[in-house]
Amino acid sequence: MIAVVKMGTPKKQIDNLISWISSQGVMVHLSEGEYQTVLGLIGDTSKIDVDLLEGLEIIDSVKRISEPFKSANRKFHPDDTVVDVGGVKIGGGNFALIAGPCSVETEAQIIEVSRRVKEAGASLLRGGAFKPRTSPYDFQGLKAEGIELLSEAKRETGMPIVTEIMDVNHLPLFENVDMIQVGARNMQNFELLKELGRTKKPILLKRGLANTLKEFLMSAEYIMAGGNEQVVLCERGIRTFETYTRNTLDLSAVPMLHELTHLPVVVDPSHACGIARMVKPLALAAAAVGADGLMIEVHNDPMHALCDGAQSLTPEQFADVSARVKGVLAAVHQ
Image (cartoon, rainbow, N blue to C red; front, side, top):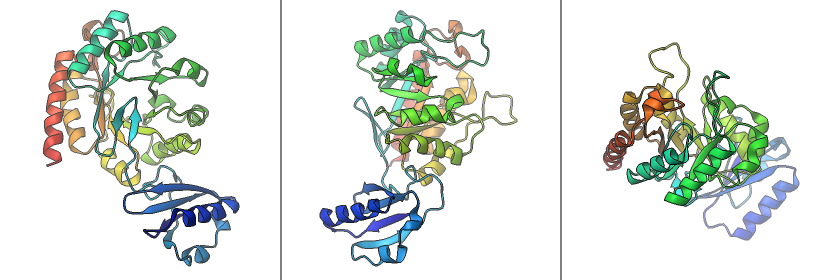
């Protein structure tokens, strides 16, 4: 349920109303936008007399929300959420380029890539320290050492870092990580999501391989229900019957998610297609449909990459994509 407060209502009256609603055993989420203030009522709202609430002088309207995701719902929070990652803003008109290798391999590799992608316009450095792989025999990442190397790259370039967590027990290792990524395979690892909800770090939540948008938003809800509202959604392609590409990029998810939620939405064209030459057209298309950012894999030597070399761009290719994306954004926002 949401209650829209009339413009110009004194803060004391709003606080008194929130206090009364809370006394009924219902949580209240306050969203103060530029044009209106919205109270989101979460919990057993059957305890609330709707007629009584609607009759209050300070209330403009009361609506029930049928969707199970409440905190992530745009009806609760009409204005776009802007997530700040170490000074880099995502959402609300702020576009972010996240770039770096699939996995951190050596100090020389991550330092070189971080410098090159920053020069080309990237604002956040991605790199896998813990790598979920389909085969147990594939490279699994450098783990704690990989995070240390990412931190070294951050010291060299000043770029905030994004890396994936695999297990809740690894959380202490992520103290100096600016944004924690939840991969597609962990999108419904609810115990992990609940623990991340207790942190104050921004979370990059990837859509699962075969999950609906509703399921995607319910996973975001798990994090937000714990108190952490700094969530960025990432569309990275879903599994379909098509075999020519690694996954099928669901570009329709971007505008639909913007309708459903106030959270920023970024797109990962690298994992979506699995083919380096297709990253550029998909990246441009994502920018055109309103994505708040892109996550692109970049490696200084893709032919010898230990992970996902086939979908990784060279720094030169990334620079070309970055420049062309800027052109698309300029055209879209005219």
